[in-house]
Amino acid sequence: MPFLDALSPLSSTLELVLIALSALTSAISASVGIGGGTLLIIVMAQVMPAVALIPVHGMVQFGSNLGRATLTWRHIDHRLIAAFLPGVVLGALVAAWLLIRLPSGVLELCIALFVLYSCWGPSLPKRHLSNGATLLAGAVTTLLSSLIGASGPLVAAFVKHSQTTPFARVATFAACMSLQHLTKAFVFGFAGFVFRDWLGLMVAMIAAGLLGTWLGLRLLKGLSAERFDSLFKWMLTLLALRLLWMGAVQLIH
Image (tube, rainbow, N blue to C red; front, side, top):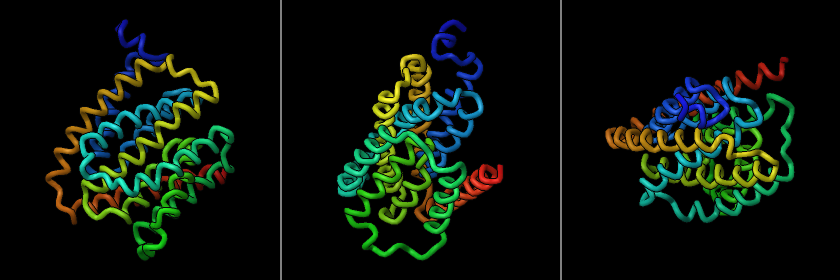
């Protein structure tokens, strides 16, 4: 397949798998609220060179989340986004200057424990959802997103406490993640990553993701608020348990 061969350095078979997976994971994120991006990066990590994993995943997720935010823009909490955006800029600037990580496993464990507390612990007091706390959340999660690739569970746990309806959660989460993933174009461009070598694959995966988003939003309309909340909480919990396992394995080795 000459056309597929020109999309990226990967084989045509792997490209087809990733394009199909982009549609599937976008549908998951649109219908359940989270999980698609993390599933996608897990699979991509098996077949892509490490240097390309986070920037390519970030651009694909930017396209997917932007499409979801556009389709649900009426439900976005614009006041939260206005407070979140300065933190995103701050976090991106720090990431561009400091592309390093904590000891392997520590970040995964910290994020997983926070998500589990958010799902099953007492509700956070309202004062923790102030503009200052929102800005801080934007900065920290953007920095983590550039360093470990997937900050979705952490952002979703934060959005969960500020939005009460399924569409508001999906829309506001998508807007937050769009802003975060967009910064990776600048962070990794500054670090020297050559995006054009992967541009064809990124465009194809974004297009597939838009189709998956459309299908996922159709499914979301059929979910009750109670049903959605249950699925959302258990999806976060499963992702957090996976992060706990990954973190523990890395610390042991």
